[in-house]
Image (cartoon, rainbow, N blue to C red; front, side, top):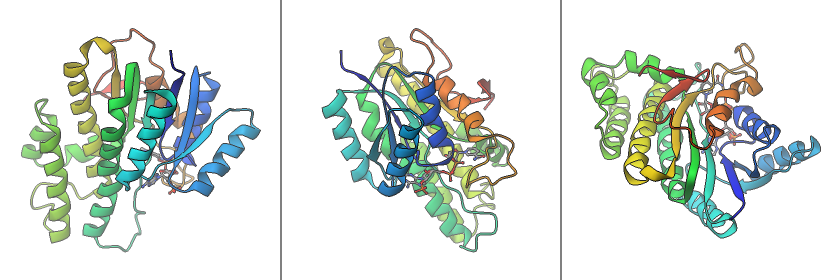
Length: 276
Ligand code: NDP
């Protein structure tokens, strides 16, 4: 059988880097691929991990470039013939004091966090081998944002029959409303980041549902998670958790033992399934 392989996105720093380190520490029985959009930063991170005694390889991946996800898919297919663990960690958020108009923030944040994650999934999920694990790093902020949506939007995002196409349409509608300045009048929350993470959490439920329907016998588990409030460039130094602590829930989900039936399609925080 081919060697196992795990891929972590946005892993040159922050929680992604910690996830790669923790995967190595947990003695993941295969190769660990650290991906980053910036080759120099990616290779520097690999060099640092190697100096700590961990064997890791770099591969380029920019979420906003569909071609780069396709190239990674080709590489994995050719080198490993499949994929065993995918951790979609890469993400971005504007700072609270950002001066870009809200519509622009919504478009840029959505492109990375939602569309980028979706494109990576479209490129890599077809490679998943039996017993694969997929972890989409979302946020507790997705639940907070959901709670401030209009009752109609909340019902849509909680509808277990919502399709990927319908979710994409909703995410697009949010960006248009944000650009027109009437997103709140249309029942959307006043947070670009939070809305993109609603997208990631709901996408995870939909993808899990599809895997259950199409690959019932393969034992694949796919979940969204929140790492907690973590001290990184994104969240700042006052956050409560270290990157290593933030990596624990993603690692737990990535290493769910063979034969485990759950969680699947859930939002998991502190290793605990959250009500959506
Ligand atoms: P950081 O800002 O420290 O790291 C983000 C990582 O994502 C970086 O490696 C960054 O690369 C990468 N990235 C951003 N855009 C792209 C792109 N287009 N293509 C590829 N990589 C990209 O943030 P965190 O480590 O804190 O965040 C990691 C994940 O955890 C995110 O999804 C975030 O939303 C989530 N999260 C974080 C929380 C926290 O408290 N920190 C709380 C809840 C969720 P580059 O260095 O090139 O910018």
